[in-house]
Image 1 (spheres, one colour):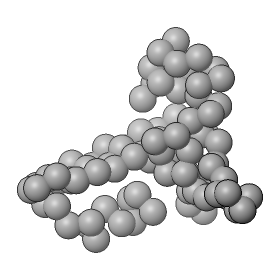
Image 2 (cartoon, rainbow, N blue to C red):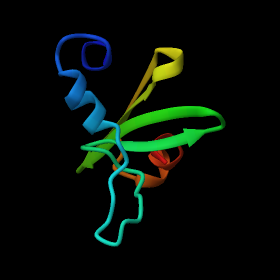
Image 3 (cartoon, rainbow, N blue to C red):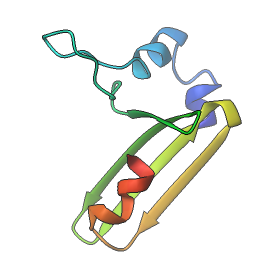
Length: 87
């Protein structure tokens, strides 16, 4: 994740677009950027992306203020396991 958020992999404009909350056609904000879910946990911004396929699930969460990344990979496809990490 360091290459994405702090390195040259993406332009500053692309990074900004990626973490800007989207808007619905009625103007309502949604907690999703481009390919990532945005949430505030306590006072911490969390940028995360998760997914699942038969037999496996995972989530990658980035906390920019702390420069912290957490990856969770499981051998289950149950969403409830990841709901707190990806909420």
